[in-house]
Amino acid sequence: MNKHHTSHLTLIVSIALPILLILIGYLVYRTNVLNNTVAVVSEEKQDVINEKNSINQSLLEAHDDISKLENELSLLDEDYDDLKDDYREEKNKNDDFEDQINSIMGTVGDLDKLSKTDEELLQKYSKVYFLNENYIPSKIREIDEKYILEGREPQYFHGDAIPFLEKMLDRAERSKIDLKVLSAYRSFDTQEQLKGQYTQTYGSGANTFSADQGYSEHQLGTTLDLADTTTNGPYLSFQDTEAYQWLLKNAYRYGFTLSYPDDNEFYVFEPWHWRFVGEDLADYLHDENLEFYDVEQREIDQYLIKIFD
Image (tube, rainbow, N blue to C red; front, side):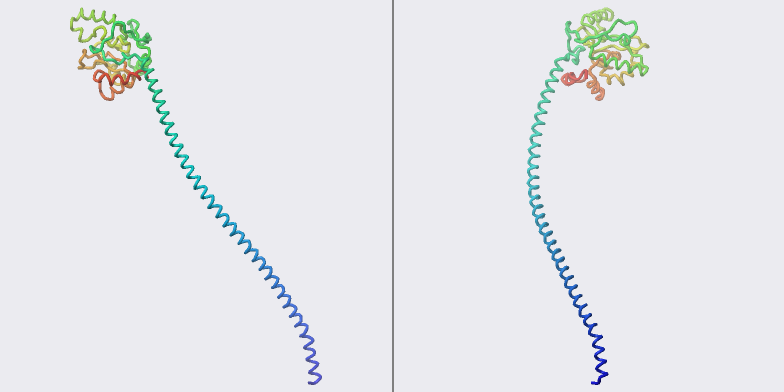
């Protein structure tokens, strides 16, 4: 090899060797970096794996806890259902007991109320049932004179029935019906005197329109004869008045019923003669198109307790 060639090779080696060393150094550095990175990634991956394992373990433990709680909840539900059943059973017992108490109290109250209500008030009279000479309504009161037909003497009515009477007459007045009381309560003696006068005048014919003493509804204090200013008295012409038509449509609303309609079996038709029987019974008679004397006494008696309600 000649000197020139050797020199040229030496130059190449002197240039390439540093480059190679640099390259080798760089590769070593990158290898170290990569190894470190891999190590870090591996470590982080292990951390992730460990964390995942920890989470999985926590999930398993949580699942176990949930299962235990579900079992406990199921047991609590069963206990709750048992308690509800026990409560329902006790409540039913208490309700039954309360119903019994209320029933007893209601019965006692009804008996007390009945004991204070005149049992004669819904009896059938008119040749059927007799009131003796000693009977006087327990709560008789004078009717306000504004409700009395002008020129008539003071009239009396059962105190507990007066509010119903006044309400009816006030409502009639608002409907421009001039309805007045002609006659109300009559004692046994008054009826006896009146019947005697009619008998002297009409003979046995008086029996067709006037009750004997003790058989008059007027003695109860819950019956009255009504008139208006056009008839000025209880005559058959009253049936042709607006007042009578108004009574037919409205009197039952206030507890009154017509005692002796046309073709009744006791007396002549008396469109003026109205008896207070309480709103419930009057409603029933009106709705069923019945007359008071058409109904059995035992059925009528059921309405006595509510006669003034």
